[in-house]
Length: 292
Ligand code: AMP
Image 1 (cartoon, rainbow, N blue to C red):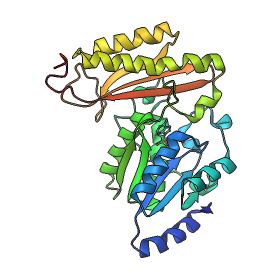
Image 2 (cartoon, helix red, strand yellow):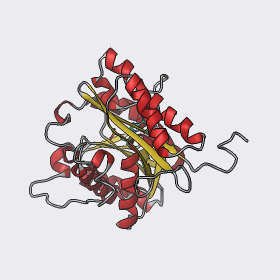
Image 3 (cartoon, rainbow, N blue to C red):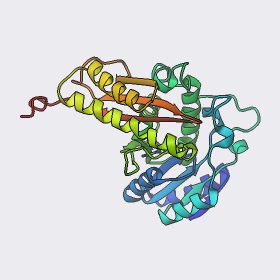
């Protein structure tokens, strides 16, 4: 595995690859790698000739007062995981390489980014502006055939798909299922912030989403599913930052589970950790609701 820290080195390493007509897969991450990231690398390894992993804790997607300063960093360990996952190229640029002096161009996806995590009462649209800007830059420097994201960050996946379509990036976006701990908690670099008590309570997120999913399977409206999820959260002592059902393409509120895939998404704080999770509920097929 080759480690590169500059755009120039990255481009020259990839020029050769492109000359040889090989396919490139890109997995963008902020490091502190876990099984969720590994599943993306595995998918990329299976699909592509060359796998590029980017490690960059992107300041542009953190609001003032968020956890940028304490976000877990473990470069040596990440490099070992990347080597074991047969990554070809590890791109780990310093901040000045991505945002040099005078940087002033941002990519913002409108509409989809001011709800859920983008609501002003949550992280705000600026968060997504940071994400789309850095992903646009990575797509432009790496020029991958396929780029991999996790369903864990469901809204992010929706926003990236929109950006790729709107800006005509010649790349396929692959979204991989959420990888979970045995007790259902979605893997996240931020789980490291949880104390044992918070860690136990956080499993309520998954249980709440499963309650929403089984309510949907009964053919009930989204309001009932949200109600069922909210009651599980409340039993677990979790006050959500948001808990909503929205269509999984335009992120508009939906009333029934039919016609379009529905994203039921939740965010909540556990001490110093803000965690998110979601479930994607496909339209109910005729006959499913009454068990036939
Ligand atoms: P992050 O390093 O947290 O920015 O995540 C980098 C990529 O890994 C994003 O596309 C995430 O959606 C994805 N990811 C993070 N956690 C998981 C997980 N538990 N399962 C699947 N993908 C994940």
